[in-house]
Amino acid sequence: MSRRSTAAVTRSALGERGGLTALGLLLVLAGVAALVVGAGWLGTFRARRPLLDPIAVDWLAEHADLARAIALVLGLLALVLGLRWALLALRQEPRPDLVLDHTADSELTVTAGALADALRADAEAVPDVTRARARTVGSADAPAVRLSLWLRDGADVRAVWEELDRTVLGRARSSFGTPSLPTAVRLELETAERQRVR
Amino acid sequence: MRVVLRVLSALIGLAVAAAGALLVLEVAWAWARPDDAPLAVPWPRWRSTLSEVDWSSDGVRWTAVGLVVLGLLLALLAALAGRREVRLADPAPGITVVTSPRSLARLVGHHVRAADGVSGAAVTASARHVRVRATSRMRDEATLRPRLRELVGNVLGGLPLVRRPRVSVVVDSPKDRR
Image (tube, rainbow over all chains, first blue to last red; front, top):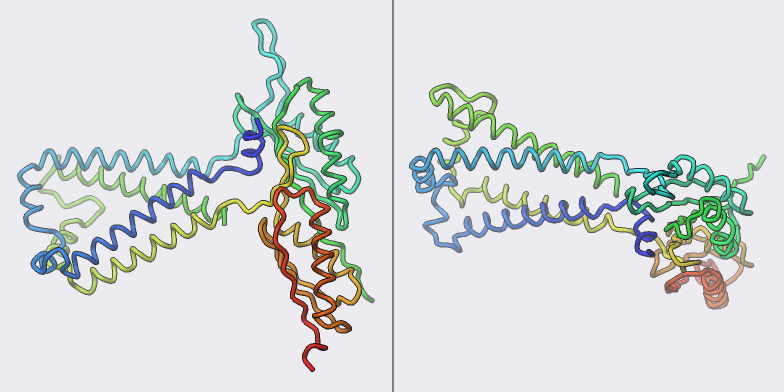
């Protein structure tokens, strides 16, 4: 439950970070391996052999069909995985609708836009909040809300924090009839409007 | 940093996909018509170049060093793109509240600048550490520093922070330069 609200704080970049780390380590390992071979630590004879080793070339020529089949499979794999990775990185973060009642003969859904507008209006009514933005995040099975509040410079952060659950989220919970709605709130302080000196 | 990560991920993914597509194309072409010239990639020329270069040549060494540096940069970028939010206590179960380090710094700076004897302040903040650098024309460091430390401590104590950051205050005053 609270893990869902924590996950809603920001879009997860775990996949991208993991992939990039793996790729980086792979490049480091390849570079180090090439340096080790070139320095002659695996034998001075090995260091003086060409990159495209004749032994390997001979083996490939003997098993040409197998090598071609493996190359085709690897190429297709790279094509599919690369496109998948690019699409996941470019995809918009989903805004699931909130399904309140899902029985055989009735279905009650609050659209993501309606929920966001209601929360935003409630949040902007809190004193010291100048601007608010709300959206649903997560999946349709496990929706959560991300609420960003911009506070006036000099705002009483603790007072706003105490108001959050009681007014804003409490009203949303009671009006939509959901006992629980995992929510991540981002509080941002705005800079003071500078006074122009004439 | 996260935008860079996302864009870079997309570009690398597209590059991998393009390389895979070229590989499939060339292998299939060479398999079907072994005597024809390659379609897009001049791989026979690459093959003859690679069979002439040996592992201990300068070109291979510099390429290897380049790979190591590039790999470290990518890993560093991935490590730096983590979350930096400052956690506030949960007001109720199922509600997570965070604020940005910049907002925390703004809040502290607002109070420090309003303090008596402070003419300017620069604040940097993270979830673990708040650094204040104040300038004062009227007071020296010895008198102002403990007061500012207490002030910042009170400001942070008034916030429902999950973890109380350490506070360090430096006062820059012309009085200390005499």
